[in-house]
View 1 (cartoon, rainbow, N blue to C red):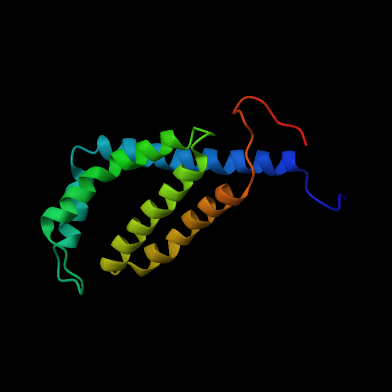
View 2 (view 1 turned 90 degrees about the horizontal axis):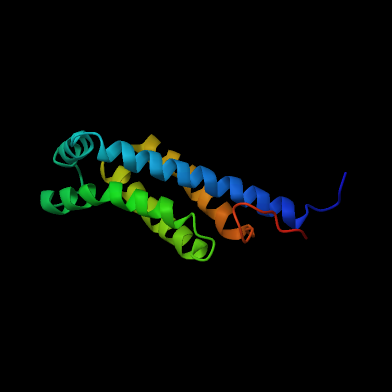
Length: 139
């Protein structure tokens, strides 16, 4: 059993983590775009109920309408090795916004579930990455 994990293995792990992040974002964004307004209507309605924190409907609807484009944009940005760090930082900011939204909606289990997404981002942020999607850098 090796005493340490090779850099190549860590880079492979980061590649897998980033593929998962990209898949999550692109799937979520595309499904929201093709929901015929269902996503926006559903969440807009939830934010207009009797909540402890009340946000203006226009602000909520504006952000909800941006979410699919943010998800697709971040998914595509994560494909870039050059802009990986910036894309992962944007991932954190976006996930924090979703966490706050679930907090405002008082969806406590969803708030807890968001931690998994932060851990994916953390792994991608701290692990080294290959310089190409199609070749493996060696140690």
